[in-house]
Image (tube, rainbow, N blue to C red; front, side):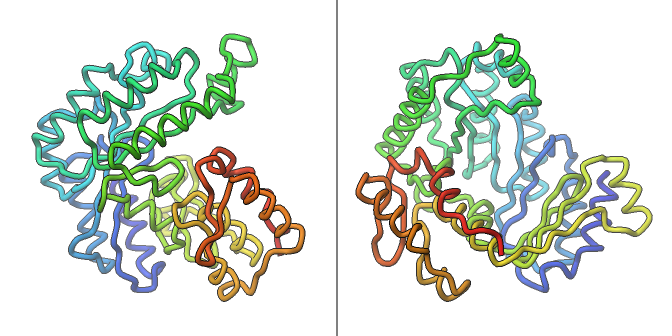
Length: 346
């Protein structure tokens, strides 16, 4: 697989049109299984075919059970300078509920060992809205996380998809999703607790200490071009999106045959406007109305303006300095508000 990924990087060397790369992200699946020499090979191929910033943020996703002292030293040796650790919870019963391979002790150890190995930019993932986790338990989990003062915390509400194990459990009445009101309360606890502890709530699900925004994810939200390689990877060049095949064998075969394993979707003006609204409403700065006008020649319709005025009256958004931004109350409804403001694809 490493050889196929390296080959795809070479085949895609013109995709970013010579722009400097500021972030590299090893995510999806289990990139922590890559050996040091494999990581070095991939990074070497990237640097050979693209211009990489000297201070590029190089992130790798890992689960606590994937990390030990030797592995962490390998990652540092390969050039990884930021870790995203899938903690999910510090409670053993919740980890068991999620069928995670690690327990709370391993979660703690992974962070401590990462610090010992010299990682000074660590992000951890947490999940709330879990059946059986009351508000006090969620608050304790946040307190447990704050003991380690991670530079970045990503927190997500449990989503139960139809075709997943949890989805099947719900249909079979083996799982009752948490009441939406309680989920909202836990989101409010999240915002209040992390903000009081010095974290900047810069995107709905993301919090960071000063100077530690995820540069990689911020690029997505700011509409920066990006190239994804490997099975299921997505790419974006502002005019279109590309989607790699998800099947590993088909992916490798097509690369070996000298064919890029992706499909391409051209983005309409409406697609671009809607995506801008979706991602920017989730962010701290909100929607730049002047940018909408200059970039897309777009102004909200009378219906949309009335809707915005009503949301402002209800305290769910504010308009300041020609920016439309959600309040904490509005963040609870971010996806719905964005969808309500969408334009019909043009």
